[in-house]
Length: 103
Image (cartoon, rainbow, N blue to C red; front, top):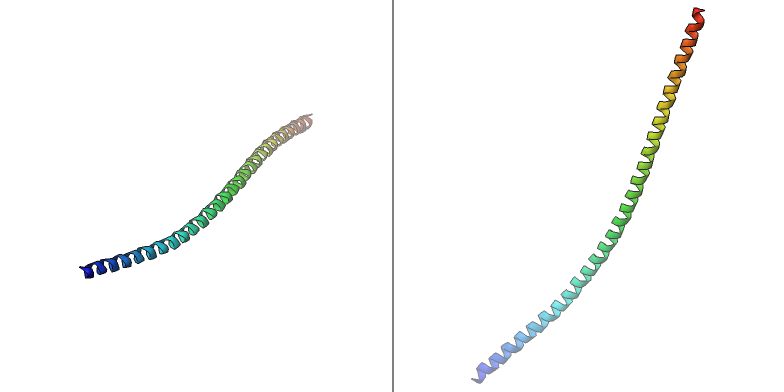
Protein backbone atom coordinates (compact mmCIF):
# COMPACT_ATOMS: atom_id res chain seq x y z
CA UNK A 1 0.00 0.00 0.00
CA UNK A 2 2.81 2.36 0.92
CA UNK A 3 4.48 1.45 -2.31
CA UNK A 4 1.33 2.35 -4.24
CA UNK A 5 1.12 5.68 -2.42
CA UNK A 6 4.76 6.45 -3.13
CA UNK A 7 4.23 5.48 -6.70
CA UNK A 8 1.14 7.64 -6.94
CA UNK A 9 2.93 10.57 -5.28
CA UNK A 10 5.90 10.14 -7.59
CA UNK A 11 3.65 10.01 -10.63
CA UNK A 12 1.74 13.05 -9.40
CA UNK A 13 4.97 14.95 -8.86
CA UNK A 14 6.25 14.00 -12.30
CA UNK A 15 2.94 15.01 -13.85
CA UNK A 16 3.01 18.31 -11.96
CA UNK A 17 6.56 18.98 -13.16
CA UNK A 18 5.52 18.23 -16.73
CA UNK A 19 2.48 20.48 -16.47
CA UNK A 20 4.55 23.29 -14.99
CA UNK A 21 7.25 22.86 -17.59
CA UNK A 22 4.65 22.78 -20.34
CA UNK A 23 3.01 25.84 -18.81
CA UNK A 24 6.29 27.75 -18.86
CA UNK A 25 6.96 26.73 -22.40
CA UNK A 26 3.45 27.75 -23.33
CA UNK A 27 3.92 31.13 -21.69
CA UNK A 28 7.16 31.69 -23.58
CA UNK A 29 5.52 30.56 -26.77
CA UNK A 30 2.54 32.76 -26.03
CA UNK A 31 4.82 35.77 -25.55
CA UNK A 32 6.58 34.97 -28.82
CA UNK A 33 3.26 34.66 -30.63
CA UNK A 34 2.08 37.90 -29.06
CA UNK A 35 5.25 39.67 -30.22
CA UNK A 36 4.82 38.31 -33.73
CA UNK A 37 1.17 39.38 -33.73
CA UNK A 38 2.07 42.88 -32.55
CA UNK A 39 4.72 43.16 -35.26
CA UNK A 40 2.24 41.96 -37.86
CA UNK A 41 -0.30 44.48 -36.58
CA UNK A 42 2.25 47.30 -36.86
CA UNK A 43 3.18 46.23 -40.37
CA UNK A 44 -0.49 46.01 -41.32
CA UNK A 45 -1.07 49.53 -39.99
CA UNK A 46 1.90 50.79 -41.99
CA UNK A 47 0.63 49.01 -45.09
CA UNK A 48 -2.81 50.52 -44.56
CA UNK A 49 -1.29 53.98 -44.24
CA UNK A 50 0.78 53.46 -47.39
CA UNK A 51 -2.30 52.21 -49.25
CA UNK A 52 -4.27 55.27 -48.15
CA UNK A 53 -1.46 57.53 -49.36
CA UNK A 54 -1.28 55.66 -52.66
CA UNK A 55 -5.04 56.05 -52.99
CA UNK A 56 -4.77 59.80 -52.37
CA UNK A 57 -2.02 60.02 -54.99
CA UNK A 58 -4.14 58.05 -57.43
CA UNK A 59 -7.10 60.36 -56.83
CA UNK A 60 -4.87 63.39 -57.42
CA UNK A 61 -3.56 61.81 -60.62
CA UNK A 62 -7.11 61.05 -61.70
CA UNK A 63 -8.12 64.68 -61.11
CA UNK A 64 -5.07 65.91 -63.02
CA UNK A 65 -5.88 63.56 -65.90
CA UNK A 66 -9.47 64.80 -65.95
CA UNK A 67 -8.22 68.40 -66.05
CA UNK A 68 -5.82 67.53 -68.86
CA UNK A 69 -8.64 65.81 -70.77
CA UNK A 70 -10.81 68.89 -70.37
CA UNK A 71 -8.00 71.14 -71.59
CA UNK A 72 -7.41 68.86 -74.56
CA UNK A 73 -11.10 68.93 -75.46
CA UNK A 74 -11.13 72.73 -75.24
CA UNK A 75 -8.01 72.91 -77.42
CA UNK A 76 -9.61 70.57 -79.94
CA UNK A 77 -12.76 72.69 -80.03
CA UNK A 78 -10.69 75.84 -80.52
CA UNK A 79 -8.70 74.16 -83.29
CA UNK A 80 -11.92 73.06 -85.00
CA UNK A 81 -13.26 76.63 -84.80
CA UNK A 82 -10.01 77.96 -86.24
CA UNK A 83 -10.15 75.40 -89.04
CA UNK A 84 -13.72 76.38 -89.86
CA UNK A 85 -12.80 80.08 -89.84
CA UNK A 86 -9.82 79.35 -92.06
CA UNK A 87 -11.95 77.40 -94.53
CA UNK A 88 -14.51 80.21 -94.56
CA UNK A 89 -11.77 82.76 -95.23
CA UNK A 90 -10.35 80.61 -98.05
CA UNK A 91 -13.80 80.32 -99.61
CA UNK A 92 -14.25 84.11 -99.44
CA UNK A 93 -10.84 84.63 -101.05
CA UNK A 94 -11.65 82.10 -103.77
CA UNK A 95 -14.98 83.82 -104.49
CA UNK A 96 -13.29 87.22 -104.57
CA UNK A 97 -10.58 85.90 -106.90
CA UNK A 98 -13.12 84.28 -109.22
CA UNK A 99 -15.19 87.46 -109.20
CA UNK A 100 -12.16 89.53 -110.14
CA UNK A 101 -11.29 87.09 -112.93
CA UNK A 102 -14.72 87.47 -114.53
CA UNK A 103 -14.51 91.25 -114.64
